[in-house]
Image 1 (cartoon, helix red, strand yellow):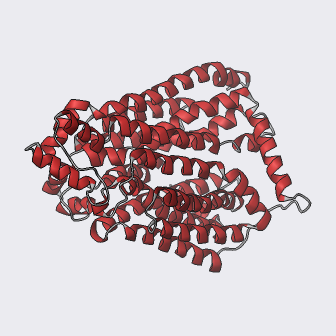
Image 2 (cartoon, rainbow, N blue to C red):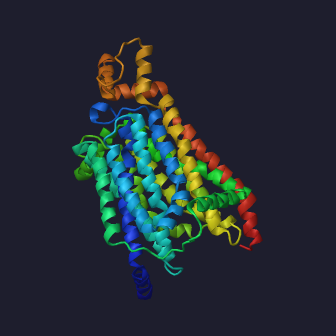
Image 3 (cartoon, helix red, strand yellow):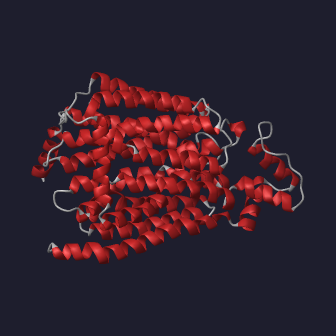
Length: 493
Protein backbone atom coordinates (compact mmCIF):
# COMPACT_ATOMS: atom_id res chain seq x y z
CA UNK A 1 0.00 0.00 0.00
CA UNK A 2 2.83 2.41 0.80
CA UNK A 3 4.36 1.65 -2.58
CA UNK A 4 1.13 2.64 -4.34
CA UNK A 5 0.92 5.82 -2.28
CA UNK A 6 4.51 6.69 -3.05
CA UNK A 7 3.94 5.99 -6.73
CA UNK A 8 0.88 8.25 -6.76
CA UNK A 9 2.77 11.07 -5.00
CA UNK A 10 5.70 10.68 -7.37
CA UNK A 11 3.36 10.95 -10.32
CA UNK A 12 1.88 14.16 -8.93
CA UNK A 13 5.37 15.55 -8.35
CA UNK A 14 6.38 14.61 -11.90
CA UNK A 15 4.06 17.20 -13.46
CA UNK A 16 5.78 20.30 -14.78
CA UNK A 17 4.85 23.71 -13.40
CA UNK A 18 3.24 24.51 -16.76
CA UNK A 19 0.76 21.70 -16.17
CA UNK A 20 -0.34 23.11 -12.81
CA UNK A 21 -0.60 26.62 -14.20
CA UNK A 22 -2.79 25.35 -17.06
CA UNK A 23 -4.97 23.36 -14.65
CA UNK A 24 -5.51 26.37 -12.38
CA UNK A 25 -6.34 28.55 -15.37
CA UNK A 26 -8.87 25.92 -16.48
CA UNK A 27 -10.50 26.00 -13.04
CA UNK A 28 -10.90 29.79 -13.14
CA UNK A 29 -12.04 29.81 -16.78
CA UNK A 30 -14.75 27.22 -16.04
CA UNK A 31 -15.69 29.13 -12.86
CA UNK A 32 -16.37 32.21 -14.97
CA UNK A 33 -18.08 30.34 -17.82
CA UNK A 34 -20.41 28.12 -15.79
CA UNK A 35 -20.93 30.82 -13.19
CA UNK A 36 -22.60 32.76 -15.97
CA UNK A 37 -23.95 29.97 -18.21
CA UNK A 38 -25.80 28.20 -15.37
CA UNK A 39 -27.98 31.30 -14.84
CA UNK A 40 -27.86 32.73 -18.36
CA UNK A 41 -31.21 31.29 -19.46
CA UNK A 42 -32.83 32.76 -16.33
CA UNK A 43 -31.24 36.16 -16.96
CA UNK A 44 -32.33 36.26 -20.59
CA UNK A 45 -35.95 35.28 -19.94
CA UNK A 46 -36.49 36.57 -16.39
CA UNK A 47 -38.86 39.38 -15.47
CA UNK A 48 -37.48 42.84 -16.14
CA UNK A 49 -38.46 44.11 -12.68
CA UNK A 50 -35.93 41.65 -11.21
CA UNK A 51 -33.11 43.10 -13.33
CA UNK A 52 -33.33 40.39 -16.01
CA UNK A 53 -33.96 41.06 -19.71
CA UNK A 54 -37.40 39.55 -20.36
CA UNK A 55 -36.50 38.01 -23.74
CA UNK A 56 -38.65 35.28 -25.27
CA UNK A 57 -37.51 31.67 -25.14
CA UNK A 58 -37.01 31.70 -28.90
CA UNK A 59 -34.58 34.61 -28.50
CA UNK A 60 -32.90 32.82 -25.57
CA UNK A 61 -32.49 29.65 -27.64
CA UNK A 62 -30.96 31.53 -30.54
CA UNK A 63 -28.49 33.45 -28.37
CA UNK A 64 -27.37 30.47 -26.29
CA UNK A 65 -27.59 27.74 -28.94
CA UNK A 66 -26.22 29.42 -32.04
CA UNK A 67 -23.35 31.22 -30.29
CA UNK A 68 -22.26 28.16 -28.32
CA UNK A 69 -22.43 26.10 -31.50
CA UNK A 70 -20.00 28.55 -33.12
CA UNK A 71 -17.77 28.34 -30.03
CA UNK A 72 -17.33 24.58 -30.41
CA UNK A 73 -16.68 24.77 -34.13
CA UNK A 74 -14.01 27.47 -33.91
CA UNK A 75 -11.24 25.47 -32.12
CA UNK A 76 -10.43 24.03 -35.54
CA UNK A 77 -9.22 27.53 -36.49
CA UNK A 78 -8.13 28.91 -33.12
CA UNK A 79 -5.89 25.91 -32.53
CA UNK A 80 -4.05 26.76 -35.74
CA UNK A 81 -3.74 30.38 -34.65
CA UNK A 82 -2.25 29.31 -31.30
CA UNK A 83 0.35 27.20 -33.04
CA UNK A 84 1.29 30.19 -35.18
CA UNK A 85 1.49 33.00 -32.62
CA UNK A 86 2.30 30.96 -29.50
CA UNK A 87 0.31 29.76 -26.52
CA UNK A 88 1.11 32.69 -24.23
CA UNK A 89 -0.02 35.29 -26.75
CA UNK A 90 -3.14 33.25 -27.46
CA UNK A 91 -3.97 33.05 -23.76
CA UNK A 92 -3.48 36.80 -23.30
CA UNK A 93 -5.81 37.50 -26.24
CA UNK A 94 -8.35 34.94 -24.98
CA UNK A 95 -8.49 36.26 -21.43
CA UNK A 96 -8.64 39.90 -22.55
CA UNK A 97 -11.57 39.08 -24.84
CA UNK A 98 -13.32 37.03 -22.16
CA UNK A 99 -13.00 39.74 -19.50
CA UNK A 100 -14.28 42.44 -21.87
CA UNK A 101 -17.02 40.17 -23.19
CA UNK A 102 -18.34 39.12 -19.78
CA UNK A 103 -18.50 42.71 -18.57
CA UNK A 104 -20.20 43.84 -21.79
CA UNK A 105 -22.84 41.10 -21.47
CA UNK A 106 -23.92 42.64 -18.18
CA UNK A 107 -24.34 46.07 -19.79
CA UNK A 108 -26.30 45.35 -22.98
CA UNK A 109 -30.08 45.02 -22.93
CA UNK A 110 -31.23 44.25 -26.50
CA UNK A 111 -31.33 40.90 -28.27
CA UNK A 112 -28.93 41.91 -31.04
CA UNK A 113 -26.38 43.48 -28.71
CA UNK A 114 -26.48 40.48 -26.35
CA UNK A 115 -25.90 38.17 -29.31
CA UNK A 116 -22.87 40.23 -30.36
CA UNK A 117 -21.48 40.50 -26.80
CA UNK A 118 -21.91 36.76 -26.18
CA UNK A 119 -20.36 35.95 -29.56
CA UNK A 120 -17.33 38.11 -28.70
CA UNK A 121 -17.04 36.26 -25.36
CA UNK A 122 -17.37 32.90 -27.11
CA UNK A 123 -14.53 33.81 -29.49
CA UNK A 124 -12.31 34.30 -26.44
CA UNK A 125 -13.40 30.94 -25.03
CA UNK A 126 -12.74 29.28 -28.39
CA UNK A 127 -9.18 30.62 -28.38
CA UNK A 128 -8.59 29.29 -24.86
CA UNK A 129 -10.13 25.83 -25.31
CA UNK A 130 -7.59 24.15 -27.66
CA UNK A 131 -4.63 25.87 -25.96
CA UNK A 132 -5.51 24.47 -22.53
CA UNK A 133 -5.75 20.90 -23.84
CA UNK A 134 -2.56 21.28 -25.85
CA UNK A 135 -0.63 22.54 -22.81
CA UNK A 136 -1.71 19.54 -20.74
CA UNK A 137 -0.76 17.20 -23.59
CA UNK A 138 2.69 18.78 -23.93
CA UNK A 139 3.22 18.93 -20.15
CA UNK A 140 2.58 15.23 -19.52
CA UNK A 141 4.25 12.02 -20.58
CA UNK A 142 3.06 8.51 -21.34
CA UNK A 143 3.71 7.70 -17.69
CA UNK A 144 1.55 10.41 -16.14
CA UNK A 145 -0.85 11.53 -18.88
CA UNK A 146 -3.81 9.48 -17.61
CA UNK A 147 -3.53 11.00 -14.14
CA UNK A 148 -2.82 14.41 -15.68
CA UNK A 149 -6.02 14.50 -17.68
CA UNK A 150 -7.88 13.16 -14.64
CA UNK A 151 -6.62 16.09 -12.58
CA UNK A 152 -7.45 18.47 -15.42
CA UNK A 153 -11.00 17.08 -15.72
CA UNK A 154 -11.38 17.45 -11.95
CA UNK A 155 -10.40 21.12 -12.22
CA UNK A 156 -13.07 21.57 -14.89
CA UNK A 157 -15.75 20.25 -12.57
CA UNK A 158 -14.53 22.12 -9.50
CA UNK A 159 -14.76 25.35 -11.49
CA UNK A 160 -18.10 24.21 -12.89
CA UNK A 161 -19.40 23.71 -9.34
CA UNK A 162 -17.96 26.80 -7.62
CA UNK A 163 -19.04 29.24 -10.36
CA UNK A 164 -22.80 28.61 -10.24
CA UNK A 165 -22.77 28.37 -6.42
CA UNK A 166 -21.16 31.82 -6.21
CA UNK A 167 -23.44 33.30 -8.88
CA UNK A 168 -26.57 31.99 -7.22
CA UNK A 169 -25.85 33.84 -4.01
CA UNK A 170 -24.55 36.95 -5.79
CA UNK A 171 -27.66 37.43 -7.92
CA UNK A 172 -30.01 36.86 -4.99
CA UNK A 173 -28.11 39.17 -2.64
CA UNK A 174 -26.72 41.88 -4.94
CA UNK A 175 -28.52 41.56 -8.28
CA UNK A 176 -27.70 40.28 -11.77
CA UNK A 177 -24.97 42.76 -12.69
CA UNK A 178 -22.49 41.39 -10.17
CA UNK A 179 -22.53 37.97 -11.86
CA UNK A 180 -21.00 39.47 -15.00
CA UNK A 181 -18.50 41.47 -12.96
CA UNK A 182 -17.56 38.28 -11.08
CA UNK A 183 -16.89 36.45 -14.37
CA UNK A 184 -14.72 39.31 -15.65
CA UNK A 185 -12.74 39.52 -12.39
CA UNK A 186 -12.10 35.75 -12.32
CA UNK A 187 -10.81 35.90 -15.89
CA UNK A 188 -8.56 38.85 -15.00
CA UNK A 189 -6.98 36.61 -12.34
CA UNK A 190 -6.16 34.22 -15.18
CA UNK A 191 -4.65 37.09 -17.15
CA UNK A 192 -2.34 37.88 -14.21
CA UNK A 193 -1.39 34.18 -13.95
CA UNK A 194 -0.48 33.90 -17.62
CA UNK A 195 1.50 37.17 -17.60
CA UNK A 196 3.64 36.32 -14.57
CA UNK A 197 3.69 32.54 -14.16
CA UNK A 198 3.11 30.88 -17.53
CA UNK A 199 6.11 29.69 -19.54
CA UNK A 200 5.73 28.86 -23.21
CA UNK A 201 6.07 25.10 -23.78
CA UNK A 202 7.92 23.74 -26.77
CA UNK A 203 5.82 23.45 -29.90
CA UNK A 204 6.70 22.48 -33.44
CA UNK A 205 6.24 25.39 -35.83
CA UNK A 206 6.01 25.03 -39.58
CA UNK A 207 7.73 28.26 -40.60
CA UNK A 208 6.94 28.03 -44.30
CA UNK A 209 3.23 27.32 -43.86
CA UNK A 210 0.97 30.40 -43.81
CA UNK A 211 -2.15 30.65 -41.66
CA UNK A 212 -4.37 30.33 -44.74
CA UNK A 213 -2.51 27.21 -45.86
CA UNK A 214 -2.82 25.75 -42.35
CA UNK A 215 -6.59 26.41 -42.32
CA UNK A 216 -7.04 24.81 -45.74
CA UNK A 217 -4.96 21.85 -44.60
CA UNK A 218 -7.06 21.50 -41.41
CA UNK A 219 -10.32 21.43 -43.36
CA UNK A 220 -8.84 18.93 -45.82
CA UNK A 221 -7.96 16.68 -42.89
CA UNK A 222 -11.43 16.99 -41.40
CA UNK A 223 -12.98 16.20 -44.78
CA UNK A 224 -10.70 13.19 -45.11
CA UNK A 225 -11.80 11.98 -41.68
CA UNK A 226 -15.55 12.46 -42.14
CA UNK A 227 -15.33 10.81 -45.56
CA UNK A 228 -15.07 7.64 -43.49
CA UNK A 229 -18.74 6.62 -43.17
CA UNK A 230 -18.10 4.85 -39.85
CA UNK A 231 -16.84 8.07 -38.28
CA UNK A 232 -19.56 10.25 -39.79
CA UNK A 233 -22.31 7.95 -38.53
CA UNK A 234 -20.77 7.95 -35.04
CA UNK A 235 -20.56 11.75 -35.02
CA UNK A 236 -24.20 12.03 -36.14
CA UNK A 237 -25.27 9.66 -33.36
CA UNK A 238 -23.39 11.74 -30.80
CA UNK A 239 -25.29 14.86 -31.86
CA UNK A 240 -28.27 13.23 -30.13
CA UNK A 241 -26.27 12.75 -26.92
CA UNK A 242 -25.18 16.39 -26.76
CA UNK A 243 -28.65 17.67 -27.68
CA UNK A 244 -30.13 15.78 -24.74
CA UNK A 245 -27.28 16.73 -22.40
CA UNK A 246 -27.59 20.46 -23.19
CA UNK A 247 -31.15 20.59 -21.88
CA UNK A 248 -29.67 20.66 -18.37
CA UNK A 249 -28.37 24.22 -18.91
CA UNK A 250 -30.65 25.56 -21.64
CA UNK A 251 -34.13 24.34 -20.73
CA UNK A 252 -34.19 22.94 -17.20
CA UNK A 253 -33.42 26.22 -15.35
CA UNK A 254 -36.40 27.99 -16.90
CA UNK A 255 -38.60 24.89 -16.46
CA UNK A 256 -37.77 24.87 -12.74
CA UNK A 257 -38.37 28.63 -12.52
CA UNK A 258 -41.73 28.30 -14.28
CA UNK A 259 -43.17 25.14 -12.79
CA UNK A 260 -41.32 23.57 -9.86
CA UNK A 261 -42.40 24.56 -6.34
CA UNK A 262 -38.97 25.16 -4.82
CA UNK A 263 -40.44 27.00 -1.83
CA UNK A 264 -41.76 23.71 -0.47
CA UNK A 265 -38.38 22.12 -1.21
CA UNK A 266 -36.63 24.94 0.65
CA UNK A 267 -38.79 24.36 3.72
CA UNK A 268 -38.10 20.63 3.60
CA UNK A 269 -34.33 21.20 3.45
CA UNK A 270 -34.52 23.80 6.22
CA UNK A 271 -36.03 21.23 8.58
CA UNK A 272 -32.74 19.33 8.80
CA UNK A 273 -30.24 22.01 7.68
CA UNK A 274 -31.20 25.70 7.83
CA UNK A 275 -27.70 26.62 6.61
CA UNK A 276 -28.02 24.45 3.48
CA UNK A 277 -31.48 25.84 2.76
CA UNK A 278 -30.12 29.37 3.07
CA UNK A 279 -27.14 28.56 0.85
CA UNK A 280 -29.34 27.02 -1.87
CA UNK A 281 -31.78 29.92 -1.80
CA UNK A 282 -29.33 32.79 -1.43
CA UNK A 283 -31.20 33.85 1.70
CA UNK A 284 -34.63 33.72 0.04
CA UNK A 285 -37.57 31.39 0.66
CA UNK A 286 -37.20 29.21 -2.44
CA UNK A 287 -34.31 27.20 -3.90
CA UNK A 288 -32.63 28.86 -6.87
CA UNK A 289 -32.84 26.75 -10.07
CA UNK A 290 -29.08 27.00 -10.71
CA UNK A 291 -28.37 25.44 -7.30
CA UNK A 292 -30.41 22.40 -8.30
CA UNK A 293 -28.61 22.24 -11.66
CA UNK A 294 -25.32 22.49 -9.79
CA UNK A 295 -25.99 19.16 -8.10
CA UNK A 296 -24.82 17.63 -11.38
CA UNK A 297 -21.33 19.16 -11.13
CA UNK A 298 -21.12 18.46 -7.40
CA UNK A 299 -21.94 14.79 -7.95
CA UNK A 300 -19.27 14.54 -10.64
CA UNK A 301 -16.62 16.09 -8.38
CA UNK A 302 -17.46 13.61 -5.62
CA UNK A 303 -18.03 10.40 -7.54
CA UNK A 304 -16.31 10.58 -10.96
CA UNK A 305 -13.28 8.58 -9.75
CA UNK A 306 -15.51 5.85 -8.28
CA UNK A 307 -17.64 5.65 -11.42
CA UNK A 308 -14.54 5.67 -13.63
CA UNK A 309 -13.20 2.69 -11.66
CA UNK A 310 -16.27 0.63 -12.56
CA UNK A 311 -16.26 1.91 -16.15
CA UNK A 312 -12.71 0.54 -16.53
CA UNK A 313 -14.19 -2.96 -16.25
CA UNK A 314 -16.77 -2.35 -19.00
CA UNK A 315 -16.57 -2.12 -22.76
CA UNK A 316 -16.54 1.59 -23.55
CA UNK A 317 -19.58 1.43 -25.78
CA UNK A 318 -21.49 -0.54 -23.12
CA UNK A 319 -20.59 2.19 -20.62
CA UNK A 320 -21.83 4.80 -23.08
CA UNK A 321 -25.13 3.02 -23.73
CA UNK A 322 -25.68 2.38 -20.03
CA UNK A 323 -24.86 6.00 -19.26
CA UNK A 324 -27.32 7.24 -21.87
CA UNK A 325 -30.08 5.03 -20.47
CA UNK A 326 -29.44 6.34 -16.96
CA UNK A 327 -29.18 9.95 -18.18
CA UNK A 328 -32.44 9.64 -20.15
CA UNK A 329 -34.23 8.36 -17.04
CA UNK A 330 -32.79 11.22 -15.01
CA UNK A 331 -33.69 13.96 -17.47
CA UNK A 332 -37.15 12.43 -17.87
CA UNK A 333 -37.76 12.69 -14.12
CA UNK A 334 -36.68 16.33 -14.01
CA UNK A 335 -39.13 17.35 -16.73
CA UNK A 336 -42.05 15.02 -15.95
CA UNK A 337 -42.74 16.17 -12.39
CA UNK A 338 -43.20 19.65 -10.92
CA UNK A 339 -42.01 18.47 -7.52
CA UNK A 340 -38.61 19.69 -6.28
CA UNK A 341 -37.58 16.35 -4.77
CA UNK A 342 -38.09 14.58 -8.11
CA UNK A 343 -36.00 17.31 -9.71
CA UNK A 344 -33.15 16.59 -7.30
CA UNK A 345 -33.39 12.83 -7.82
CA UNK A 346 -33.54 13.30 -11.58
CA UNK A 347 -30.43 15.48 -11.65
CA UNK A 348 -28.54 13.01 -9.44
CA UNK A 349 -29.48 10.15 -11.75
CA UNK A 350 -28.56 12.25 -14.79
CA UNK A 351 -25.14 12.98 -13.24
CA UNK A 352 -24.44 9.25 -12.90
CA UNK A 353 -25.34 8.76 -16.54
CA UNK A 354 -23.11 11.66 -17.54
CA UNK A 355 -20.18 10.18 -15.61
CA UNK A 356 -20.67 6.85 -17.35
CA UNK A 357 -21.04 8.21 -20.87
CA UNK A 358 -19.37 11.63 -21.03
CA UNK A 359 -15.66 10.70 -21.20
CA UNK A 360 -16.02 7.89 -23.74
CA UNK A 361 -16.50 9.62 -27.11
CA UNK A 362 -12.75 9.98 -27.64
CA UNK A 363 -12.40 6.25 -26.98
CA UNK A 364 -15.03 5.48 -29.62
CA UNK A 365 -13.25 7.60 -32.17
CA UNK A 366 -9.99 5.87 -31.30
CA UNK A 367 -11.65 2.48 -31.86
CA UNK A 368 -12.48 3.20 -35.48
CA UNK A 369 -9.39 5.28 -36.31
CA UNK A 370 -7.08 3.67 -38.88
CA UNK A 371 -3.55 3.23 -37.60
CA UNK A 372 -1.56 6.42 -38.04
CA UNK A 373 -4.70 8.59 -38.36
CA UNK A 374 -5.70 8.76 -34.69
CA UNK A 375 -5.01 12.51 -34.36
CA UNK A 376 -6.79 13.20 -37.65
CA UNK A 377 -9.95 11.46 -36.45
CA UNK A 378 -9.78 13.01 -32.97
CA UNK A 379 -9.87 16.41 -34.64
CA UNK A 380 -13.56 15.85 -35.32
CA UNK A 381 -14.40 15.59 -31.57
CA UNK A 382 -16.01 19.02 -31.27
CA UNK A 383 -18.23 18.70 -34.37
CA UNK A 384 -21.13 16.81 -32.71
CA UNK A 385 -20.90 19.16 -29.70
CA UNK A 386 -21.29 22.14 -32.03
CA UNK A 387 -24.22 20.51 -33.84
CA UNK A 388 -25.84 19.50 -30.54
CA UNK A 389 -25.81 23.11 -29.36
CA UNK A 390 -27.27 24.25 -32.68
CA UNK A 391 -30.26 21.88 -32.46
CA UNK A 392 -30.72 22.61 -28.76
CA UNK A 393 -31.59 26.19 -29.75
CA UNK A 394 -34.87 24.96 -31.27
CA UNK A 395 -35.88 22.71 -28.37
CA UNK A 396 -34.99 25.22 -25.66
CA UNK A 397 -36.34 28.08 -27.78
CA UNK A 398 -39.17 27.42 -30.23
CA UNK A 399 -40.50 24.21 -28.67
CA UNK A 400 -40.34 25.46 -25.09
CA UNK A 401 -41.99 28.74 -26.07
CA UNK A 402 -44.85 26.84 -27.69
CA UNK A 403 -45.35 23.99 -25.21
CA UNK A 404 -43.94 24.96 -21.84
CA UNK A 405 -43.52 28.73 -21.34
CA UNK A 406 -45.58 29.68 -18.30
CA UNK A 407 -46.28 33.23 -19.48
CA UNK A 408 -47.49 32.11 -22.92
CA UNK A 409 -49.74 29.42 -21.48
CA UNK A 410 -51.14 31.78 -18.84
CA UNK A 411 -51.85 34.38 -21.53
CA UNK A 412 -53.69 31.67 -23.45
CA UNK A 413 -55.69 30.83 -20.33
CA UNK A 414 -56.67 34.43 -19.72
CA UNK A 415 -57.72 34.84 -23.36
CA UNK A 416 -59.86 31.68 -23.22
CA UNK A 417 -61.53 32.94 -20.05
CA UNK A 418 -62.04 36.33 -21.76
CA UNK A 419 -60.21 38.16 -18.96
CA UNK A 420 -58.49 41.27 -20.29
CA UNK A 421 -54.85 41.77 -19.33
CA UNK A 422 -52.22 44.41 -20.25
CA UNK A 423 -49.44 43.47 -22.62
CA UNK A 424 -46.09 42.58 -21.04
CA UNK A 425 -43.59 45.32 -21.81
CA UNK A 426 -41.32 47.94 -20.29
CA UNK A 427 -43.96 49.28 -17.92
CA UNK A 428 -45.67 45.95 -17.15
CA UNK A 429 -43.31 43.06 -16.36
CA UNK A 430 -43.77 39.33 -16.44
CA UNK A 431 -44.03 39.28 -12.63
CA UNK A 432 -46.66 42.03 -12.81
CA UNK A 433 -48.65 39.85 -15.22
CA UNK A 434 -48.46 36.84 -12.90
CA UNK A 435 -49.55 38.92 -9.90
CA UNK A 436 -52.51 40.52 -11.72
CA UNK A 437 -53.62 37.22 -13.28
CA UNK A 438 -53.50 35.57 -9.86
CA UNK A 439 -55.68 38.35 -8.45
CA UNK A 440 -58.22 38.23 -11.30
CA UNK A 441 -58.44 34.43 -11.11
CA UNK A 442 -58.88 34.67 -7.34
CA UNK A 443 -56.09 32.13 -6.84
CA UNK A 444 -52.73 32.09 -5.13
CA UNK A 445 -49.81 32.01 -7.58
CA UNK A 446 -49.11 28.40 -6.56
CA UNK A 447 -52.73 27.44 -7.31
CA UNK A 448 -52.65 29.38 -10.58
CA UNK A 449 -49.44 27.64 -11.68
CA UNK A 450 -50.93 24.24 -10.87
CA UNK A 451 -54.09 25.07 -12.80
CA UNK A 452 -52.09 26.00 -15.92
CA UNK A 453 -49.93 22.86 -15.47
CA UNK A 454 -53.01 20.62 -15.27
CA UNK A 455 -54.63 22.32 -18.28
CA UNK A 456 -51.75 22.36 -20.76
CA UNK A 457 -49.28 19.71 -19.50
CA UNK A 458 -46.12 21.75 -20.16
CA UNK A 459 -44.07 18.73 -19.05
CA UNK A 460 -44.88 17.04 -22.36
CA UNK A 461 -41.59 18.49 -23.63
CA UNK A 462 -40.00 15.48 -21.91
CA UNK A 463 -41.31 13.28 -24.73
CA UNK A 464 -39.02 15.06 -27.19
CA UNK A 465 -35.98 15.30 -24.89
CA UNK A 466 -36.12 11.68 -23.72
CA UNK A 467 -37.12 10.57 -27.22
CA UNK A 468 -33.85 12.00 -28.56
CA UNK A 469 -32.02 10.00 -25.88
CA UNK A 470 -33.86 6.79 -26.76
CA UNK A 471 -33.12 7.19 -30.49
CA UNK A 472 -29.44 7.81 -29.64
CA UNK A 473 -29.34 4.65 -27.49
CA UNK A 474 -30.90 2.52 -30.23
CA UNK A 475 -28.53 3.98 -32.82
CA UNK A 476 -25.52 3.20 -30.61
CA UNK A 477 -26.68 -0.40 -30.09
CA UNK A 478 -26.96 -0.85 -33.86
CA UNK A 479 -23.60 0.87 -34.37
CA UNK A 480 -22.00 -1.42 -31.81
CA UNK A 481 -23.26 -4.53 -33.59
CA UNK A 482 -22.43 -3.37 -37.10
CA UNK A 483 -19.12 -1.51 -36.55
CA UNK A 484 -17.49 -1.87 -33.13
CA UNK A 485 -17.99 -5.59 -32.46
CA UNK A 486 -16.77 -6.68 -35.93
CA UNK A 487 -13.70 -4.44 -35.50
CA UNK A 488 -12.98 -5.86 -32.05
CA UNK A 489 -13.34 -9.37 -33.44
CA UNK A 490 -10.95 -8.56 -36.29
CA UNK A 491 -8.41 -7.20 -33.84
CA UNK A 492 -8.81 -10.25 -31.60
CA UNK A 493 -10.31 -8.35 -28.63
